[in-house]
Image (cartoon, rainbow, N blue to C red; front, side, top):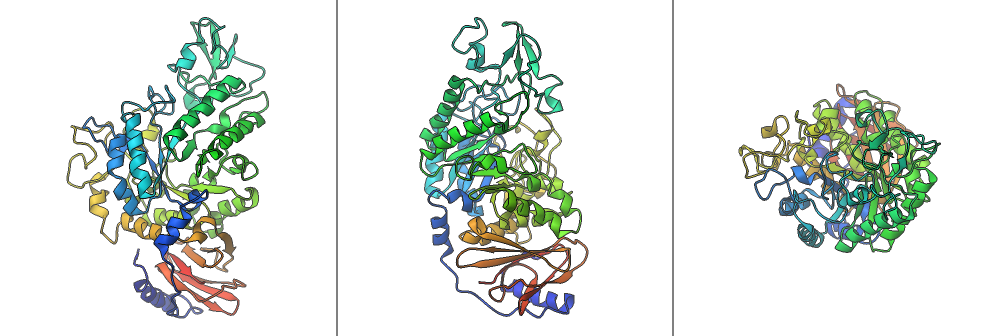
Length: 550
């Protein structure tokens, strides 16, 4: 796949037009006056709407960079790699859980909400990370798993004998393994067949949606609400820039509802009010509704700033295994219809839960490239999973569960047996497949590498308001294999073209497109020409392109 930017791409596009389309003619040599993109990016990434224009990077601290040779990544290691991330074009970090944990649920079982796990360092190391990131213009957003903490947490240990203690009703207790006021089971089969676990010390059953050692907090207790909101204040006071909130829709249960019931939404509004009392903070929700995250936005201003669009993030591999452009466009059109004004989708193509994009694409390079192309140019804030920019492949070792296959160590160096991740004898989990072929050292500077693809794509997005907050118009092409969409801000308009066919080139016409100007090719390889109100497009097999038309 040719990844050269204009002007070489213009030559390729002209040749393509001659061979692929009876409509298309060589693209005119149009060039629009450009802005100072660095200054534009700085302006867009400042103020309360910074998150709409940022590119996030999800980091599993445990697997990113080990600084002390114990085989486990840590905060000092992450801090030492900030310049590499900044060079790639990353504006913000989402940190998987860094708090103390028994690690039964990979850190999402938080044993102390106001400390850092010794595996990753200490609170001072987080302070140092923030002090290094912020001057670089990089934000830091840790995971906040407000439910459920493990049974080792002090809040759970206190209420057992006696039941009259201060924490007696901080959890959900029953004399029997059921409760008529709760109609919920465990969240998935891996967490057991019963949501009720006998506590022999108290001689009662507690409710759990996840592992049996993770009793659910009772969010109908005002003391629990206050304590957890104080946890958010603790981290905000230290300078974090917001939170990614894990399965927050499951905080409160009832006899008739288990997900985002009114009490849960009321809590989220209180959490949002806490964030709004600090300048320029943001939070993103892990939705448990894979078809729409609209419920997480409230009126667009009183709940989450962002929520993951899993209709695309979890299922993008299905439309990319076919040839219909409408299947890729649908999740974004649905968001336009369902989300309130002010809502912002968060977009992934891989994560610690979803797995590696490489695997979702079945190792077909053009698929994960086009999936990332959509992620970076459709409405929403992109989140790059660490190593995705290198096309990291999955491993085959599970320490906690099979999701560990996608949580293998970052590959920095090519020849080093431990690939620059650790100076110790071995990492906490083995590297993924073909690690020698997916190192930063090996890919950086190689124009044909996945890293170079990401580097160029992020550079095109950077400092262009249209991609962060611009409008979306999906154009209908008379060839159903061609996706064509328009992003526009007040003073700039961009057109994206993409082919779903991996075998053959395609050409088509979008009638009534009414593009405001001729096309300047910025990225990729395709042609786009105007004929009155119509637009003619030609795209190579599995191709993509970004054009500026105003």
